[in-house]
Image (tube, rainbow, N blue to C red; front, top):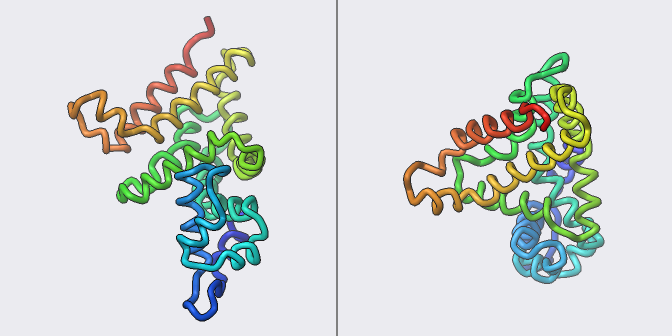
Length: 224
């Protein structure tokens, strides 16, 4: 998938003859912002074309449908994160790995993305949160496909590290784990509001450490 995205991004598309050249990157940037702000159903092809300063026919010509454009935008943004997750899993060695190591391998590439660039981080987190919660069947199918392999690896490694839990307890706790990280990444500003400035909530590295500590304790606790 990563190779496919890289090859696609290397091509330049002429979108509006006579009015300059619109690159694939500009198309996908506009699509990502529209999807992040409005969701799949609310994002309109015409609005994406207008933002990219391209004619409407160009988007239909190069991607064919809104679903294909959405898939391309997600592939481009998520491919580096997924590649890093898989590399980290491979580096863990023979299982069972520790809960902390497995959780960091999966969640750090997303949670710490663009931590030195607040504007890019905000857009990434907004996009990531939106695609994980969008109710559209098209989005659910695309996300299931894109994240299938790293999620399968995560679940398998965590299950091996949580042999003290039966399946029902483990999978309910795992469900909560995804909720914790998704909320923490999407609503970081809420922490600052709750704390009323008592600490630097923009230090996401420290935040990651604290969330990992919390989740490890939850997964590692004895079954009730």
